[in-house]
Image (cartoon, rainbow, N blue to C red):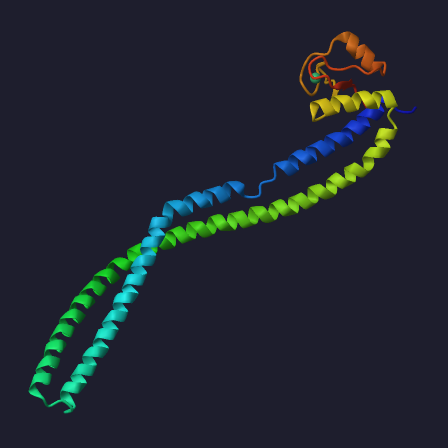
Length: 239
Ligand SMILES: [Zn+2]
């Protein structure tokens, strides 16, 4: 016995339902958008910590360089003072004065450097902690994006498969019924057919299906659910 009209429409509906589900899944793919937002917010939040560490690191380097330069200068004066090139008492006095000032400056710079160096690890470690968090979020974004791309490819292939089956299934359905079905499908934007469940309710919206509608469905006459307008169907249990 060949299928009833409604059974043939139901076959088409199964295909359309699959296509609809795939479209929904594709739209809901998680490409790490939430994580991207989280990362942006976190970067903003910890920017002062990271900037402070950078600044502190630069300061230590700057002071270190300054000490080196001052010591080089001091060495130069020491050399001039003791290599016998300068014999003029006034000049010697001037150099000694310069040396005294340099020594003080070196001492002051070294003291400042020591203080900054002492405080540096805490600042740097705090920044390192934030780097760790940032890296974790970035990894999660990359992984989600990769998964989303793979899943999207899979869905696309599956969609094509169902799409190819559709024309054949549609051509099996009587034109008037197909037309009715397509109008409901377009109006609803999702599916246009529903199975009546064991409680005699619409499997899609849950509304009870009256006896006379059940009789019509069993008689292969298209009947819409009073709640959702979907065309009702009662599958014949396979023996
Ligand atoms: Zn319904």
